[in-house]
Image (tube, rainbow, N blue to C red; front, side, top):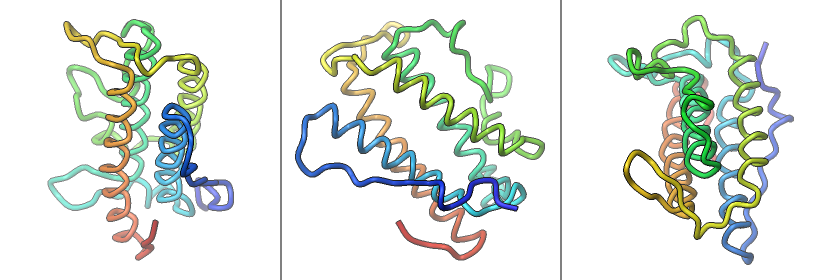
Length: 175
């Protein structure tokens, strides 16, 4: 039984003309939906399947990774919440690759619910953020615009990985 019903994933193309912030949000949502599309229709075992040794890359690991990346950059970087309030969910200093490595017993339903919940929280927390604003990462100031562009790059790269993983699982290719 698949964890995500393909009919539940709706991907909307970004508008061709619009304001910068609206377009960035639309492209992020497009990439978020693309990752979910790559996972749709697969069962738990398929979602946990690793690419090729020694890599621990899997579709479920990518979703876990993107959940933590989104929370880190948007809830800490843009919304300004401290790490103590928004700690990583799937890794820590002693297990820096836990998001990818520790998927064998992970519950895919819980992982996708956490991902969706994080996106809802991020959208609410960043709704009024001005792209000209900035946050702090360590000792450096980082513009919100940079964070949005970085997140697009992060999704584009990992959606390429997801494409290859999905093709290895069942031959599905495409957008």
